[in-house]
Every structure is written in C-alpha cells, then in structure tokens.
Image 1 (cartoon, rainbow, N blue to C red):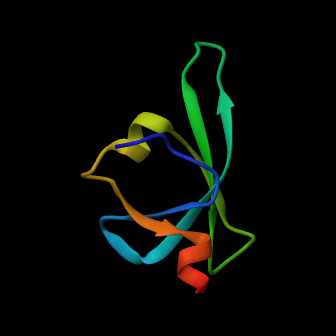
Image 2 (tube, rainbow, N blue to C red):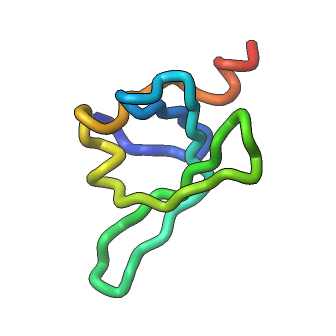
Length: 71
C-alpha cells in the first residue's frame, strides 16, 4: 500500500457500510505512528488506530478519497 494521506477513505472489512476518512496523524512515545479517522456519515464519531492496523488488509480496505466519493 502506498503512503496514507489525509482525505483517504477506508472501510472496515466487517462493516463496509462505514466509511472512515483520514484526518490526521499522531506518533506515540514509542515512535509508533497512528492515524486519526473520522466517520464520514457521523462527524462526531472518530477513532485513533495504528498505521499498521489500517494497512492490514484483514481489518481495513481502501475506499478512495473524499473528493472522489463526493463527485
């Protein structure tokens, strides 16, 4: 998978109806990079997960970008 960028959309493999947009990045004290996700359909719902988890194809799959989804 290429570099993860702000604005990319992902869906969980077990909940494909939920779209998550990458809105930011955080690095923890151990140097592990995390990705902040916001639910596209519920702006009050967000989560912070490791970049490794987001790249794991068994957990998440890419779903385009916000701009492409709105077109």
